[in-house]
Length: 165
Image (tube, rainbow, N blue to C red):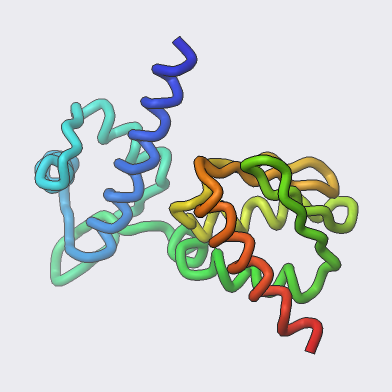
C-alpha cells in the first residue's frame, strides 16, 4: 500500500506542475478545458481530481486576453522563479558544510536554518533530487544514483564559492 501511495503522490506532483505550466502559457477558462489540455500531455484526470488540484494550487481567475482564465497565485510564480536564487542567497549568508553519505548529501548549517534550505531546494525542483528531509540544523538530500548526487553537490558548491571570494 505504501508503494502505491508514493506513486500516486509522484503523479500528482507531475500533474500539478503541468497545470502550472499550462495556465502560465495560455488562457484556460474552465476545468473541462484544463482536463483536455492535461490529456494532451498524458494525464488522464477526473473532474474531481482537477477540482482538488485547482484548490491545492490555489489557482485564481484573472482577466487574460479579454476572458476569465486561471492563473497561479503570485506566491507560486515567485517560488518558481526564485528557488535557485534563494539557495544562492542562503548559501552565501549561512555557514554550510556538505558531506556525502551513501546516496545522500548531508548539509549542516546554523540551528533553525535547515528547513529554509530544504524549502529553497524543493522550489528549485532539480530533477536529480529524489527528496529531502530537514531537521533543525541538518538536511538530508536523497538521490537515486551517484551521478545525480555528484551533479547536485557540484552545483551546490558553486553556489557557495562566491561567498569565499
